[in-house]
Amino acid sequence: MEGHEAEFQTLATAFEAILIAKNYGRGVVVRDEAHPLRFYAVRNWTDAKSAEKCHADPDVQAITSKLYQIARVTHVVNGVRRPDMLRLLLDDRRARIEADRRTGFDRRMKDSGNPAGADRRAGRDRRIGPRRLRDRPGEVDLVSAARRAREFAEATYSRFKVGAAIETADGTVVTGCNIENATYGLTICAERVAMFKALSEGHRMFTRIAIVADTESPTPPCGACRQILWEFGGNLEIVLANLQEETGTHQLKNLLPLPFDARLL
Ligand code: THU
Image (cartoon, rainbow, N blue to C red; front, side):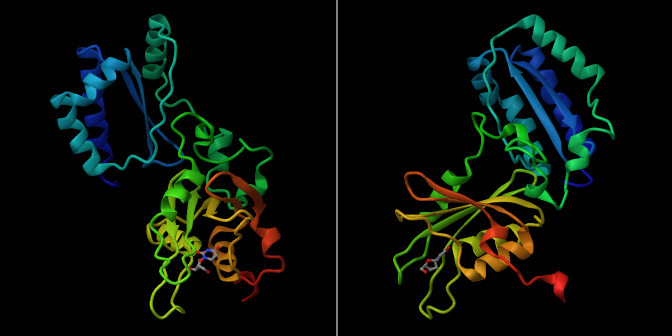
């Protein structure tokens, strides 16, 4: 949260001190130069048991409860690495000397917030933000998120439940489901619910949307949703899936040729 950066860093330092004092492991917090309100907390646990003990430790909980009041956790990525104390110590030294050694020439900084988004990427991994998190253990799986959102669908009249999950440029996932009501006409699709939720939470850059329905053939977004997704999300990657598998990936520009948008006004 803006204005709480110093407090955040003080709490993070106290957290790191406990990790070392109680031999739970090591920790370092790196500030993202491109996004001053974003921090990456990297923790190397001594072992899995230590991580568990640390989470249950009241001293740690006292710090984390304060941390969570001033900062939002958007990603937790778990990875396992062979224990290698020398390496851990070296990493720790390097972390202290070069807390954040990225410079203005760093490609990732230039990419951040680039409106060309998906178009600009050459490969699946060339993307802005925490791109290396993709396909790693602990990664938020967009299709699974859409499947879970679908469970909340209010589809009393059509019985056709749809779930959607939209990924923002910073890796946040916002979900939606279709919501029907007695007037029928005021129904809103899962995709627009997801997009409006994301917009209302301040997100403005998007990379992908997953859409899930319980159908054998793909359920693509309706015309109204294509328009809204295009206007606010640009050329999104659209991942279609049913409850078992992915049924296709498309670029929004191909689903909405010759679009009407603000450029024409
Ligand atoms: N629906 C969606 O939520 N998304 C789509 O892509 C297609 C249709 C919803 C609207 C309505 O509640 C139900 O599915 C049947 O049209």
